[in-house]
Length: 560
Image (cartoon, helix red, strand yellow):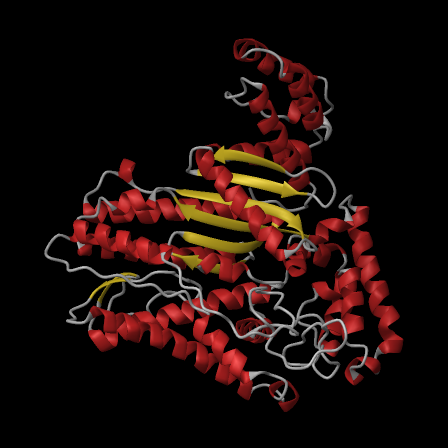
């Protein structure tokens, strides 16, 4: 399963490496089918001018093609072998780049077993017989049945070996452990993996970590703290330039990947502990107070502006997914129609990559209509709206070429989750998935924004895309001085009126909310209350939206 594998991560680099690894596997299989068997790829669809099958950041979990073969099971077996060989080649390259101290401690027999059995590979095939719609439905039915027929293979028994923290179903591939299942000192914290003492990884986890480390060193994968820093980066360079220059110099001297690691006090303490035996660091130890004073002054600049220091540590995850894609695929009557639709999805995947980059985010994957990205808090909502706009544009372009009605086209739902960088990445991914589900459950073609404060209750607000201007209006109202306590009084009002009937609520809620608003300082800056405010449930939705808008308004720059 693609999302579960990618989500098995403790760092954003693990997350991106998992996506890249699956993309490479799918790329290799698709090219094998195309070049060796002359397959016509339907999804992902390509043309002969493309050097690759799909964008680097995409990770489709299925391939649909038409192939002429007397023994289709052999084609499937060769595709499976191709996928496993790519994993093995990746593992071999990893071993060749590891110091002998690492290689000697790896159980290669166990590692090879894990690599052979890592992929859940399923295949189904049917004769085309001139009826594409019937054939596609039947092959989908067979594939679903095959996936439901699970195979369980007994892994090698290693009773005295710890599990991998990235995938607890797998044993660690390291041979030796200290008391308490810790890695030996000669492995922990050493390049190129920089494993923590309890990161007893499996073979695939090691591949993720190594690929992620290389991407990070190339500046390609920001951490969650770095993403939090990006929301305030421009303000800090404008109002604390000398301090930021000092931190830049220390970043260069210490060969640190991210400036934010020096700015965050807790992250800096972690770095000092990780490198306490590093001679390159020890030579500068007496000068560290200069660095720490510069970081403290930079953080003080935020406090002077009224920006809580913890805002440096909040970031956003975005997940988007097409609505009713299966129903739409059922309307495609030929493989040419399906190919054209696949090309539209591939074009959107490229759009997603450039859009996320424009908002200073990091794209984890864009598998057609499926998108996952990290973003600065103050740009996440604008990015989500731009993605929805680009998706609609690609669908309309497809409809024009195929002479379809726009009303029947798929739409996009998205969830944005805002959380603290110290939250476990697995929790963060669960939260953004929940936000996306909230958008779909509310009727699809919507944006759901969930806020998970470090202390306090999590809240979610859902809006249709064409109503998202309400976010900007309430953010501006709070920036201009609207009292921050307003949403909490509205929540209290909702509790007081919960006992009323629907008809009574419809008659009272809007007027009562208006009364509370007019008593508040800065009420003249507030936008008109929304037309849908007719119940206590609606009132809670509005209050949650206001709480999130008030949080966004604290940032000096906000795009919504």
